[in-house]
Length: 401
Picture 1 (cartoon, rainbow, N blue to C red):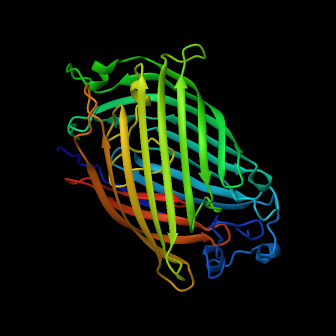
Picture 2: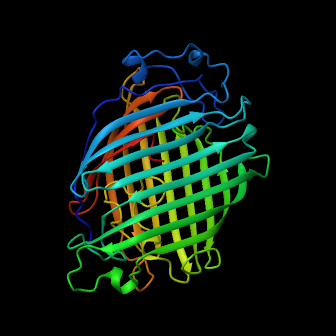
Picture 3: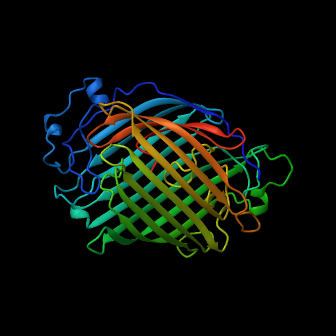
């Protein structure tokens, strides 16, 4: 098997002075949040609203906001200014209502890369409806490494393009348990795709098809089970989301093709401690007619931070399978600091064949700093090691999964 060498990413945290909170504490159902101990707000002695300390009610409509600016650096992006954060709130005071969350960040790099994702998970009264959103805009020069599992990190293909993603789904509660089903719309647009370092040799991008623009437009169908309660930092429970999406020419797409994703997560609280054992499996398949090159399953292009230890886009193919486990533990009695250790593995199908013949494993560890004890929001700083020199630092507001 051949593996990648990762360009080391280094992020420097500048300050956390804009982290704040504006609501009462939740009373979670499947994943009751422990609001004891200290967070950054307590340490920096920011004024906390009096009603936030009242844990007897949720105060529907009041937002808890966590915001952090920092400076990033990678060999690919060079310096980047980043603002990341999330908003947690309840749409209703009913005990059954899950906490809703909107997560967003804005990054601008020295290489003129603009990255702006917004992820939302919103619950209505008593969890009758669940709105799931994934909106993104990227102006994004990036290195790609070809198709299949036998590619190397040497002589990558550099592409430049603008990327617009709009995914919005509405799911409805369909049983007495935490089962939901629904429908959504997916739109993926890549504009002005340019290969910057063409050397006269045919690349996988050339051989697969080299369009100037690509559009995928489809109707998605979802089945969801989610009883975690807190989606920002689950303490126990399970999440399963199965999404089938056929893409069609008649609603604006370039080709008729199909995708299927199966996202499974399980969380175990260990005894009477605050330690958590978490499992994640993400499987992403395409079939039917040919999907656009930049819409194929690829490392780090799902909605979360898949593949810690490898650079984004390191693997790309018609199908991708991924598994990860993480152990989360406390480091300080007051809950301000915690730690994690994790291991993951991923594989993509070969091209032009379609067999899985390689595995890319990674391990790593990280620290957690409590930004908001009422929403459970942590600053996550992780370092992952892949195979043959692949490594990198990953910073996130909230848990990876």
